[in-house]
Amino acid sequence: LSQFGAVLVIPFVYKNDLLGLMTLDQKKTDGTIFDIQDIELLQTLSNNITIAIRNAKLYKEVESAYFNITKAFANALEAKDVYSIGHSDSVTKYSVAIAKKLNLPSEDIIVITQAAMLHDLGKIGIHDYVLAKEGPLTQQEWEEIKLHSLRGVEILKPLPFLKEVSDIIKHHHEHYDGSGYPDKLKQSQIPLGSQILAIADAFDAMITDRPYRKPKKRLTIEEAMEELKKNSGTQFNPKIVELFIKIIEENPNIVLSHRIKSE
Image (cartoon, rainbow, N blue to C red; front, side):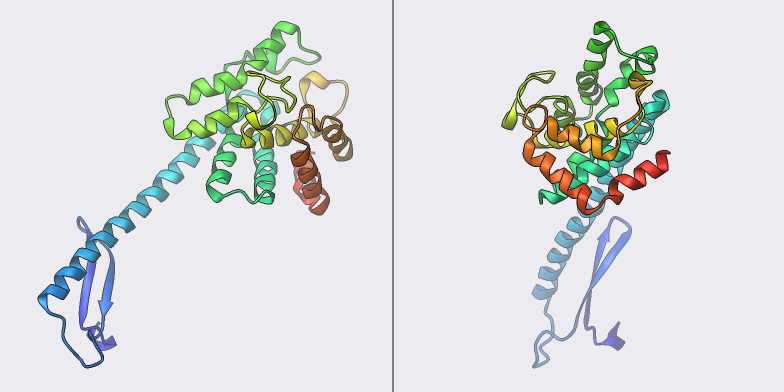
């Protein structure tokens, strides 16, 4: 490195791994050399930088592990319920689009992404015959379905790093007017992520096949948007409904690409 003008090289070493190098040319314009105090100070700095680099790498690895766990859970649900195949991906896509339109911080968008992927996780504990039943559900069957948000919370309880995700999942069936479940929260009492997820989830359910809706077919995109408007202020946050409809109108491919794939 001396060929490039370096007079001092400080390595960033973690255990036996070289993470990087800090190279310095002359200390001052007058050519003053580095003394031992300078080198000790720079060595201390390099140790701190090494720790920071290592922590950043570990964070990335942990973040990747979180998403892998999330995807594994979502895949497990899709393996159980054929009607949920692709649903989590679509709900995630819509939820992230809304979150970005709201200019939410990247940390919040990551949490909403994970919650969207796992929002139906609790259905793993629902009987197969209920999930796949064609035609209307009985009251007892409907009550079992309504438990899925709480069951999802129970499944995620051993994973404390998914606590925020768990809270969003728990309340994604609350209604803006307080008539939803499980806690009958209303308006600002409902986590913003849950309000976003509720709209994305309902919209995708309306435009895709569901066994309980036969022989009635899925709704068109336009019909689904009208349903969102109709339930704006009661089931859904009206501002988020308005925002989501604007997203679809500005970028119809966000929905059309999914429809083409599913058909």
